[in-house]
Length: 132
Image 1: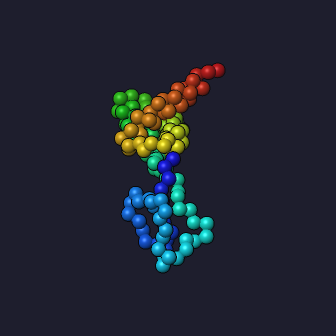
Image 2: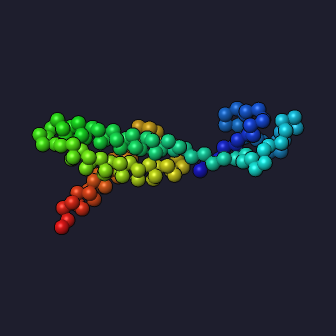
C-alpha cells in the first residue's frame, strides 16, 4: 500500500505528489496540526474496485441475457434471475480480491478479472442444481 502525505486543513495545500524533504519544518504561522492528525495516509490504488467489478459483472449479465433472449426461444425471466445470482456473487468476490491489490488496475481489465469468478460460481450453481 502506498502512503500519501496529507497536510492539515489549516496549512496551504502542497502540490500533487509532494513529500516533505528530510529536515523540513512547516512555517510557524500556519499553526499546529489538529490533535491526532495523520500526516501519512494509506492510499489504495483500487479505490473504486467494487464499483468497477460490479459494473463489469452486470455488463456481462446484461450481454448474456440479451444474447440468450434473442438466441434461445424458451429463455424466461426466471432463467435470467437465476443467472443474476452467479454474476453478483462473482462480481463481489472479484471486487474483494482486486480491492487489496497494491497495483492500480486499468478499468478495461475489470471485465476480464470478473469473468473467471462468474464462470466458477455459475458452475457451482449448476453443479448444485444437478446433484441429487
